[in-house]
Image (cartoon, rainbow, N blue to C red; front, side):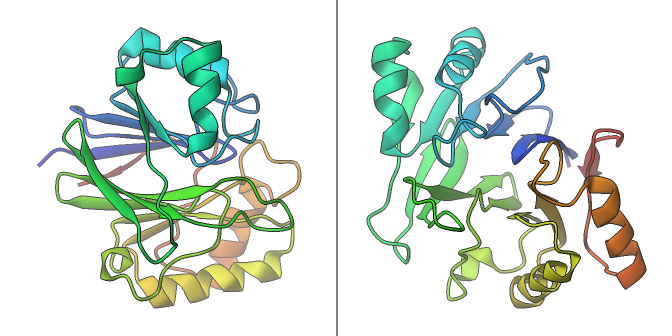
Amino acid sequence: MDKVRINVLGVEAVKISNGQQTIFIDAFADEIPPFRVETADLILVTHDDGDHFSVEKAAQAAKTTGATIVGPPSIAYPLLVDEQLPHEQLVILYPNQFKEPAAQDIRGINIKVYQTEHDGDWHPVHVSYLIEIGAKRFYHTGDSSMMDEDDPDLKDLDVLFHVFNTKEASQIARLEEVQKKFTPRTLIPIHLLHCSWTMTVADFRSEVEQRGLKGFVVLGEENQPFEMS
């Protein structure tokens, strides 16, 4: 069975690879430090905020690797018109209702897309992703805390990437509640690395250790990639 390697690149940027398929989520954006891109199959975008999506960087990565970009309607015009991305390299998925996600197999990878609301008072067009690679399931919330408690596909995930949008350590209790409800094998908090408005990776990791939390994996720039079988 192929191992899956996970890198958190900054803000909510994630790379998932099993050696045969590679997926990037919100990885090509203004706030993400430069990194080398050798291969990519899918580039997923949750919304078009500048710290999650740069049209120039995403288009360049797709053109270089041949990857397919997947995202909500707000990314289509700048990619197709401004950057002249070939239309066959773009898939727009945006379900009408939160409770009615859209599912599609794209390049042999099963994707389920949820219409979700951005946390706080900002309301861009926003989606969250359930990704299946082989027998493993990964859910990336993007900038949203919304998760459908009635959807069995979101229970017992292999990895849940969940947003953490505050400097308040007390709010870690909310992630503990999510963990109890959805019972992921691993919960990886995102929005920590290179985010001045949230807890630092070191402080979050210290809180996890002090609280004795199990199943949390806190990834930072000094860490080796997280691997799972």
